Length: 413
Image (cartoon, rainbow, N blue to C red):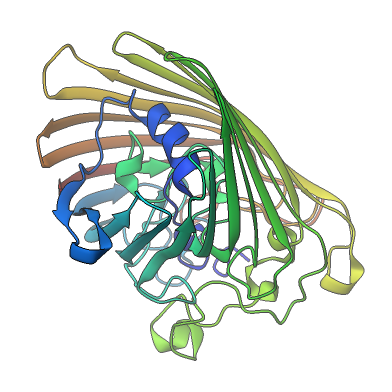
C-alpha cells in the first residue's frame, strides 16, 4: 500500500489556503499576520463596473535532498529511489472582489505541498476535478456580519495552509496530511464581535458526493490570543467507486504519467472519506514570537460495505513557532509533531505507524523575493503492527529515520 499511498496519490492533492469566505478570512488572516514570513500582498486594481479588485500570487521552486530512499526495484516507504532533485513547487494567481453585496474569489494555478516523511510530489494542475481552477466561489454579503459562498471552496480544517507561502515552513506535518482539501460546496460565515463561525457543506475530498460537513469557530480573545476549533464529518456513506481528486486528469492513472488520474475512494482510502475529525489550535503572540499548538483526532467507524472492518483512528499534536529577528529580513519557522495511527487502516506512512517529527526553516525575505531552507527529521517510534506490516525507510526497510533538506526560492506579489 505504500506506493498506492505515496504523497503523489495523497495529500499532495490537498491544497488549501486559510479562508473560505470573507468572514473566515478576516479572523484567519489576522492570525497569520503574526507570522514573520509574509505571504503575497494584494495589488489594488480598478475593476470598472465590478468595483475595486485585488490581485495577488506567486511562484517558487526548490532543490531537495532526501534520506531513506529505496532503489529502482524497491522504492520503499518513502516511495522513491531519487535522493536529490529540483522541482517547481507552487504557482498561483488570485483575483478577489471583497466589497459590496456580490463578491468573488478566483484562484488559478497549482500547489504541491511537501509532507515530511514522503518524497516531494510532481507538479500538476490536475489535482482537482476543476483542473487548474484551484478555488472559485461566489460570495453574497447581505450584512457586515454574514457571508454566504458557493463554488470550489478551500478547506477549513487545521492550521496549516496548502500553499507553502501560507506557512512558515515549506514542509508540512502529518496533521495536514490526513485533512480534507478543496471541495465543491456552499458555506456560511457569521461574525459576532470577537467570535466568528463557518459551516461548510459539500462533496468533501472532491468526490462529487454531497454528504460532508465542516465547521470552524474562532474566538479572538485579544490581538495576541486567538482560539480556533474545527471539525468535519460525512453524514452518509461515500462508496468505493466515487472519484476522488484528480478527476480532471487523463484516464490511465500512473500508467498515463499522471498520479492524479481518476483516483477512486477505493484506491485513496475509504477511511479518510468516511471519517469524523475534531481539532483545535491556539495562536499566541509575544513580540516577534508566534506560537501555535494544535491537536487533532480523526476516526473511521466500522462499515463493512466500504471495507472498514475495524475501528481505526489517527491522533496528531504539533507546536508551530515563528520568530522574526528584529527588523531584519530574517526569520525562523519551526514545528514539532507527534502522531499515532491505530487500527488496520492506512492514515500516514503505513497502518499502525507512530512517530515524532521536527522541521526548522530559516528564511530571508525582501519585499517580493524570498529564500528559505528547511531541515526536517522524522523518527518512527513504531513501524510494525498487528496486521502484517513491518516496513521502515531505506533499501532494506529497516530504518526508523527519514530526513528532508530543502532550499526554496520564490517571488510573491
